[in-house]
Length: 155
Length: 199
Image (cartoon, rainbow over all chains, first blue to last red; front, side):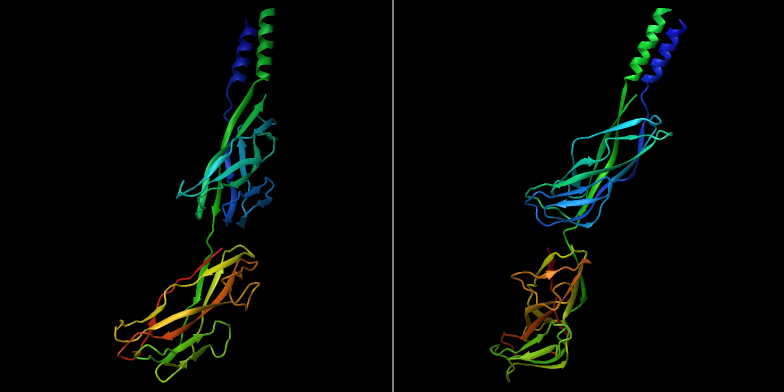
């Protein structure tokens, strides 16, 4: 009977969902861009190491940077696996759909990280920003959106 | 005794194969700045002049402000006749503009003003002549093409590595072609003109 009780307790403990959290130290920022023509697709690549590349008719006036996330409340010394999520659209903060949009695909991040003894890990996340070849022009201003990273832990 | 041990093993195996997944949210952002910053360093000034307009509007004198830096003289009058003339009392100066926050090495184009009239500031009298401005000339004063005339057919206003480029604006001022009964009044004749600089 004691063993049955212990087994039940163990099962309950391991079945509890983790209350993992993250703090955004800085957003994934593609910088300040000049987009001269919207007839061809252009892209800006920000890697997790901070390096920046461009393709097409886009110029970087001010460099951006990868996102920096502090993952907390995970099990200590545990491998966290990062999974790709679907692309997100960046929309003009004021003009909305009146302006052309960007598509962002996360691709510059490690496949996994190991948490420290406090169950924390710092992750840098880069991505590819792609212009939308449309009849709309890119209005000056700030474009943003929320995206997310899927993190899984095997234990 | 056997049954509890089995349950214990089962629960441990179950626990060790459990996967936990979470989604962590963060922002992605970008700023677009397709416009350049254009700063006026000085206005176009035709100086202080004596001006006579042909009452019939047939003869027209012309005063040109040179856009080339350090030109001497800056203001030159031509086509002077007895009926229409300019005489320079005090030299003018070209307008000066600076473009900043532009893409290094980019080529910019200038759209010249469409407004053509200079009006008497204290109120235009319809019987008095006005001035007509035109023949806009842009001289690049900094950047890779410094000292070159701006070519609107093949734009050559090229931005320097620091994202800036400057240029002067000169123009010509013609006496009126209207039929008038009064001479030019003493005072300031002025107009507001817009230029556009873009990629």
